[in-house]
Length: 476
Image (cartoon, rainbow, N blue to C red; front, side, top):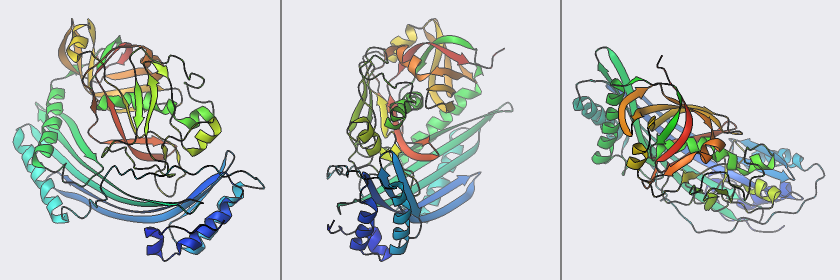
């Protein structure tokens, strides 16, 4: 092979000639099906203001590369945090052992794209460090002044600038600068010796400007305060099987965790998904359409192209209740005879790519949330979720509600504490009775874990009414 490598900002900064790196990569990929050299340079900053003072400030800078050689279903991967020709050569020799006499055919390269879904800004540069601290102090003071019951406030700013280069065996190089920011506010209130806490966060792929505007952070403070005050008045949640109305937006985390992972191509390649063999069959109630779309500008889970170089796209997973698609990286697509969908993602250069969600959501319907409540004799309105436990292969879940209310005779009554939703995603999909007209994305706070890797994701859904879910509670 005699292609010339495109210039690489990261290789250039490390003093490595692109043509030399390409020659090493091509030698490693000879006879393999696929592979790439993934280079990364990431800078991140985190500031935490807690208990009326700056409690933590950190800055981290990491750089490195990972070199992958794919032969059949075997992938050799080696990485290092030293970017040099010698280190790349050592990694290539190690990763190439995956071939072990294998003689394959190089897969077609990812299609080219000019797609750019976010500006190449550096969130660490603006505002200045001192201005960020002053902003957090202002948030703290403003939150405490909102209500005399506020006894504790925590506010944090997190920003990241992630530069990546992907060098492919044909000499093509893809470069991306991926900004990511988040502002989080947590408020604790106290009344008659009882304390409750709640939080609100927001962020996305941009600089801090949008999220630090006064009207934005003040709305976050008010939302956290509202939830905390609601929970001060909460009663113990009864347990049992009942109809559940889920709120729009962040409650889509249940769909993401309990259903979304089952549509990732590697689980189908291994036959371990509860949805394996269900393509073209009904897996959800009529009207249910679920989509993964990494090509939405500015969203937390969006990427101009994935970590293998495939442009992100809109992938319909369920259409009107019928399973119609999967999320693929290049390996699962090749093994299952499909096209890569731009879902090959990795946490960092030290990790291999795998099929992962980007922005996963259920599309809106025609029902109003008011009609869902009115049609429920006895049930639960789950407005917001916290943590939970999910078996991502079979979709069995236990989710904790951070804000929930009883529904009695078609009306929302008392707020409840200790509510959990228990079930499995495959069954829950078939029990959806009403789909709201109030679709919303989450505010930009999601991180998804799989096989020890965490990646930023987006989540969304309209309000939903699901029949016969098991609700765990604390009432005796």
